[in-house]
Image 1 (spheres, one colour):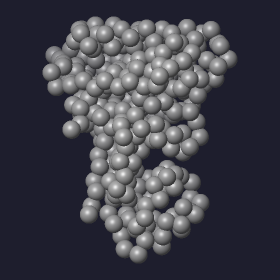
Image 2 (cartoon, helix red, strand yellow):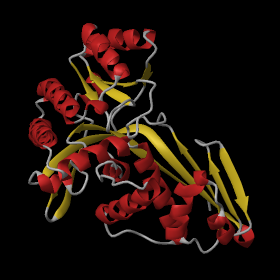
Image 3 (tube, rainbow, N blue to C red):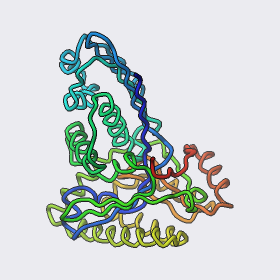
Amino acid sequence: MKIHIKSPTRVDLAGGTLDLWPLYCFVGGASTVNVAIDIYTHAVIEPLEQGRVSLDSKDLGLQKDYKNLTEALADTDPRMVLLQTQLRYWKPPQGFKLTTQSESPVGGGLGGSSSLTISIMKAFARFCGRSFSSAHELVHIAHNIEAEILNTPTGTQDYYPAVSGGLNILKFNFEGIQQETLQVEESPLAQHFLLVYTGKAHHSGLNNFEVLKGAIARDQKTMTALRDLKVIAEATEKVVRDQRWSELPGLFQKEFEARVRLAPAFSCPEIEKLRELSLHNGAQAVKICGAGGGGCVLVWTPEDKKEGVASACQKAGFQVLATRPVNPLP
């Protein structure tokens, strides 16, 4: 039986970086807010006979066939690390073909690798007849797997929208992570939501690791910016709960300034150009996606200015992504 799992990616609205353990412990707990979007990752598993294994990564343009799982795990091609780490965890008892693909731009800052990890894990769970007790258990295992693959500390907020969809409010404290998922269909997010790709890939792990090192060293500039991001995220959470959407642009502006103070590498010439261009054409604010340094930018714009802002961005060589927020998954 063919298994096809697709998982949404996300746009983070506030609190990014604070989900990286133990940063939220350093500031007395934290909140993050993100929303799932209809840019998906896909994992397809089909059974094969005689224990054969076939791995097909559409994003890498990589297709490999093996006699069995042992041979697949012995492959020394560094491009196979992501899939091999998953295979070591699952140890599928029968042969299979796994095909993976992401709709997100490479290095887009949309949590694409986290979403793909969730898609693969959901597909293998069904294939192997296993289940997870909760979204938290799935996320916990997924983020440990990805930490091994990336060889760097990873946060956890990116996995939740891939697991659950919707608008996610996540709280990080001594007791762990609490998740609340809200509907987005009645919100004006889609009307103001413009997602633009800068054309430059980013590397979230490197930017966040530099922040982590600064926090561990008790660098005052780093800690002040992290505390500011915490306050902004808490305010964003309240605004979203109260549906005071008109206040989001001001919070996005504060978040942008605090994030660049945290580390200048969160911005880049492409983001600065896109920001200036968007604001000049009527946008109200821009929000760096993920750890920045490239990737995508959320442009918050009045509905009557949206077409003009999109056109200006495209004429300047940026890619406007047709996307909408996704409601909680069934």
